[in-house]
Picture 1 (cartoon, rainbow, N blue to C red):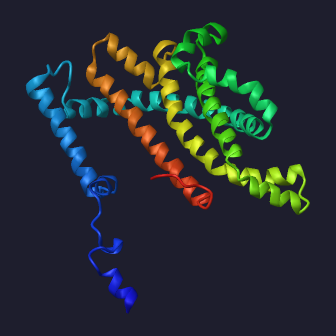
Picture 2 (picture 1 turned 135 degrees about the vertical axis):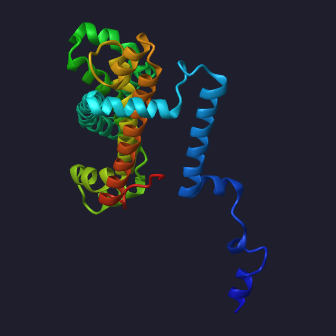
Picture 3 (picture 1 turned 45 degrees about the vertical axis):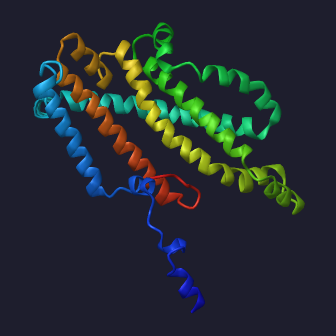
Length: 275
């Protein structure tokens, strides 16, 4: 009874009202949909009364243009091209970055050797490498893959290294005291501890891969969503430009949510990612 009395008192945390910040963070789908509708309404108002519609087309004009591009197959081709480039560069970058990151985090001499160079290179945006990549690999697909690989590799190497460094030392000492060798400790202790960091890095790298592919396609491409945006700029087709931008946002959001759902379903006990 005492516990029940305490839980119903006004000062008990169990009955305190949620804070304003909590209300905003945990907004319901209905509120999120309402905010999206308000955003579209503001867009429509700006296009109608503030900005020239040829510079800022209305939502309906953009939707109509999107339907035309879908009907001709142009949007689907560009979208598939960009998605293919992202997946190839992403998989290659992750396959190289994860083992390098594990080595950096596990061996102190590797970290001391590589960390300064990695810290220097990660501050360079991928678009700065686009002209150089085109000179090295030409205007074909290899230059696009290289830009995406560069960014994903850095993210995954840093994430994996951080996961290894954050492994509790007591777990390693306990495994060693029980007779576990270095390979066993790496497989049974370090890798499971580093996995949440790796999963978070994979999700972040997927979003950044879209930034990299657009950077590559804006300069040296003849197809893809980035090329669609750049071509529409030269033709002053702002409705087509917005279709490309929104397509990038929708595709990136769908892949991000898909990656989150897959990680949570397959390896939920290792991942602690925000929704």
